[in-house]
Length: 217
Image 1 (cartoon, rainbow, N blue to C red):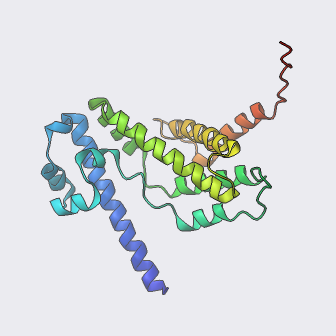
Image 2: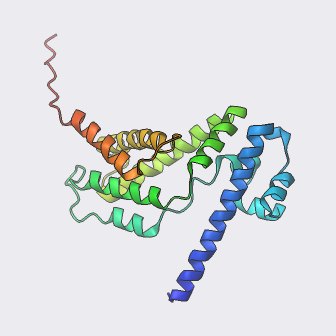
Image 3: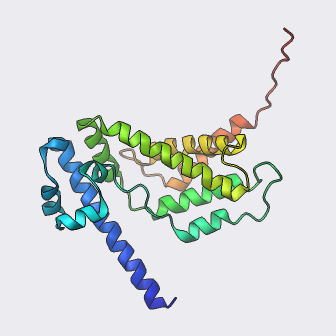
């Protein structure tokens, strides 16, 4: 692919991302102030400076616009770097998995266009329309499954392998907590630093011996 084609493709995707973000920002703002039934798709289009047809090219409904596009493609180079596992384990997770998860997550977050203001808008919209919370929960469950499948693919193990399930669950919990702090009002610490600190805290716990008394009953 030529440099020109690469540039054009990248520019086109950046424009699409900017349009998605604009639509979501307007939908969240209107939902927070009026509720989902207090405005129309046409009003979203007018404020975002787009046509009705463009709106439905990106989202199926106002609810979809408020939730946002969580399924955007991840950076291809980051995915390739993560899935390149030079030493897969033999029936167990590899010794490089934690470091790979760390670098992958930091890379994705550092390239993300999501801002603290975006998160605050989403929280305000959910507060105005609590039914959106169930939608967010369902979206989260889908992402958790996709995350486990991505790890399983890297490790050459089935997605229902206990170590894959726990890797996805524990790392997911750590990143959730890291995100809460990172997007909190007044935070000035970089994402990499926060995630590294939290992972070291978790490793301190899980490096302890698990001495379970035998059940003699």
